[in-house]
Length: 212
Image (cartoon, rainbow, N blue to C red; front, side):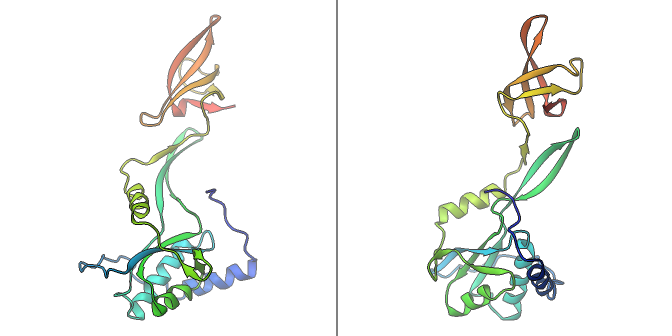
């Protein structure tokens, strides 16, 4: 899913932004209840405008507290993962939304909990068939949560195997070559360079090459 902001009318964006910020000044650190969840607890997906996920999360958490819904709505998760971007010769770790515009809610779905979630400013609806929200399978939820807990951030590179690149650092600076292999774990790339009429493989750091 591409990480692009959904088109929203300027005036509507401002109204939503104001509504979301009215009650956003509170401690959003919450601890998962130590008691067992009711048997009819499920994970549901709600849709919001892309870019408003964190504001919706905070506002919904506040509504749960103020309306006494802690026994029906348990967790609100904005799926994210850390990603290392390589830009202008520098590494930068950023947090990227895995599913822009979507938020996971662990809850017991009934009329009251549905009302609280659905009427949170910025929430455009539940994901499901018709008017009936569809719960996620637990193994799918586990995969998403595990992905968020990954220790090593993913490395985002701008080149792929077969791309032409230019070496920007080291003894082969300004040489052109072709990407032959990419090692994301080591952040290394093997580039085939024509050297004295022979195609020679050179092992380089990601920061030492740029796509042409």
